[in-house]
Amino acid sequence: MKKKMTPYLYLMPSIIIMVLMLGFPIIYNIGISFLNGSLYNENKSFNNFQNYIRVINDPKFMQIIITTIIWTVLGVTLQMILGIGMALFVDRLKKGKIFMRIILLLPWIIPGVVTALMWKWMLLSDIGIVNYILNIIGLTDNNILFLSNPNIALFTLVLVNTWKAAPFWFLMITASLQSKPVDQIESATLDGAGFGQVFRYIILPHLSPVIASTGVLTTIWTMNYFDLIWLTTKGANATSTLSVYTYRLAFEFNDFGRSAALAVISLILVSIVCIPYVRKMFSNLKYEGVL
Amino acid sequence: MINPFAQQDTKKKTGSILTIILISVAVIIILFPFYWLIVTSLKMESEIYRIPPSVFPDAITFENYKYAIFQTKIPIYFLNSLIYAGGTLLVVLICSSLAAYSMSRFKFRGKGIYLLIVLLTQLMPLTTLIVPIYILFGRFNLINNRLGLIAVYSAIQIPIALWLLLGFFNAIPREIDEAARIDGCNTLQILMKMILPLSKPGIVAVSISVIISIWQEFMLAMTFTRTDTLRPLMAGVSASITKAGIKWGQINATGVIALIPIIIIYLFCQKYLIQGLTGGAVKG
Image 1: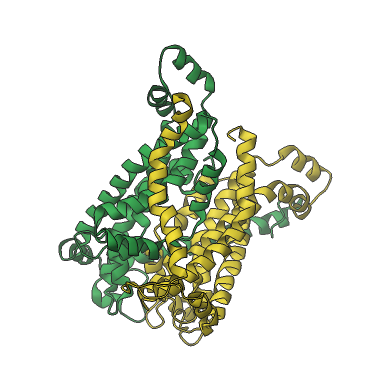
Image 2 (image 1 turned 180 degrees about the horizontal axis):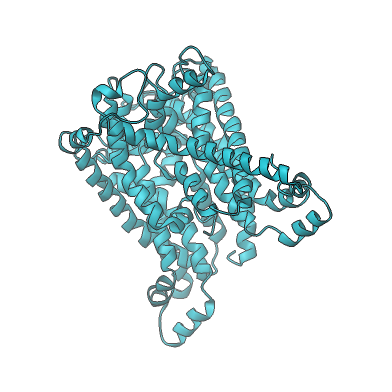
């Protein structure tokens, strides 16, 4: 009897904290999403999915979904292309690999708050250095309103986030390239294959599992990412994603019911994206003999 | 793209020139924001707002740092960040090493479900938690309370830490447990005397991961702290960059101060930092 309890005893402390601080709040959140009333309303009651209906009928809802999709899909695509490109490029360098790695990873390890601060300062339309540089090079005549023009702001932020997140792709791909099939590449090269063919038929298949798992991970991280948007535009100028709008509903409009409903919707969306990743992690664990 | 397998010399030459250009562009794009942050923090107020901006400062001044350190609450915020990071680290290390040990060494029912939940919590958007926790904390007087914030931080960090440690514990051969058992150790002693000392790199990676994550976090911090005496650094910095009339010189100096611990850890414990930040996805 005692032996059977042992593993559960070891799990207890973590379970208690996670249930109190994660499990219960999530269930509570689902509860709030079905109730009317704001934070201070004592007599809460079921309101026939009014919170959900109001969220979905909100004219901003579609805009927020579209913004979230652009932010996530465009962002992850750029991160992936640049990250893989940098990794392949640095991998082929003869000198300075380690130096390049240290530099290329810098944007990714710094706090989001500092990233936001740096770029907000550089992107100021009147005295920002970026407009000044673009003017000198001759790319633009007028000052671009990077963060206050609703047509541009989202794309500006996607680029800033790419600056910050592409290094993660670089890191993952670099790690995978350490075990690339060198013999195959050599013999293919001797047979006259160009780099394009070697990449297409040998390197890409080798990288594809890492690309898949990194893809899921960065999709979720990008979708949930709050810091940069909040600190630069607070979601104004058509840059509100699901997570930013969920926060605004609660803490700017004090509409906790609607915020909770939107949170449940994003939770469902995230879960759909996660399924393949979770499956893969589980099959890895089975392979390692943990499960 | 450059053809790495080009035979001709001319091609090789254009290739290496292209390489140099590409590397320089990448390095400039990555490093320039850091340069600009530091340079701005060292400029006089009048020079900061000058048009056209000066790429190299006319005169270097430490006024912005003096102001940030002596006239603002930055030192208190800094200290608070350390307290939150330390408190969370203590809770996370205890809980996650016990849990990872159980996961790694025992077979029992419900293991799969526990791991599934651990994985899912890592992927969950924090914004789903913030409303319910805010309401619950309001009830139990935990808003603007160190324990409240440390508890949430711990809950968020435990799954990541557990996942990381699990990898390290699994790499330790079971024969070592067996030998210790024969010597009369019980399971807790095996963990304390064998597994933990053997997974020192894992403990270091987890510690760095927790410290850095807590150091960087600002959404929960700005929501759950109300007074300067309890506010951590990132919440303090974020409050001053979202309000109107930003003093760019001082805020850039604050940014540099906030970066210092991270850069130090990065330069000296790069391997562990990367392991921690990737949640064990990369075995650096």
